Length: 69
Image (tube, rainbow, N blue to C red; front, side, top):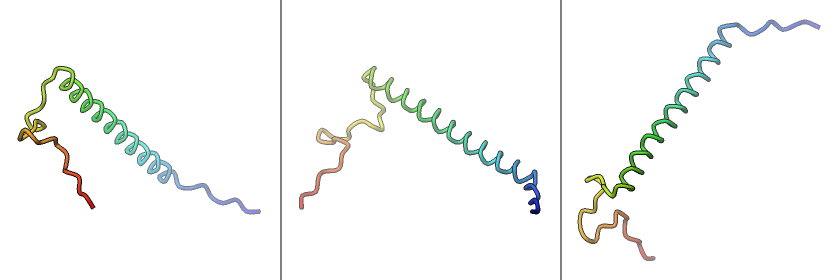
């Protein structure tokens, strides 16, 4: 039986770097969503609504009307 040579060390470092980048992205997205949620929650609790989210007319419910078939 012949032994296969071990994989190059640079391949292991590349895999480790890829995993580190993906993990950093996941953490960044998680933290970003938490900041967004905290801001939205603060608006809801204080009763203050961002002007961009406020209704534009008395009948504006921010939802598209249902289409009947």
